[in-house]
Length: 106
Image (cartoon, rainbow, N blue to C red; front, side, top):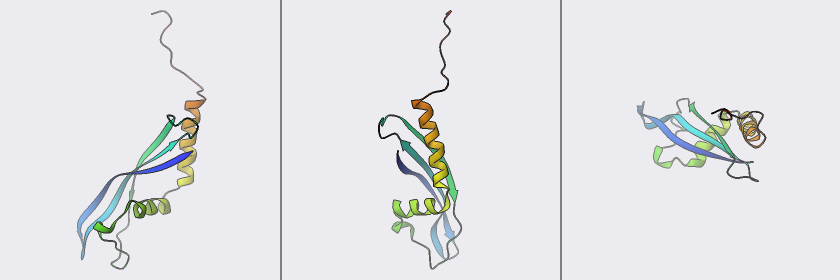
């Protein structure tokens, strides 16, 4: 499987004490794709609320990178559990256990 992060939005407090543009919520999408059949994908959407940073660990908004945000997500979320759920979704697409048919008597 191939897994990718998509950062949908970053919510910021305009002012938090002496700090400006403090990120407090990350909205993300985590996507899995079957490398053998790239058109088979699954994803999950979520949000992560961050604790207020102290002045020492604060990173100015202009210096934030995707890699930093992904680091916050991966250190806070149960990524292995998310992967298991996405893998199950993909497996059900590749090996369905039920299907919906149109009525044969239409």
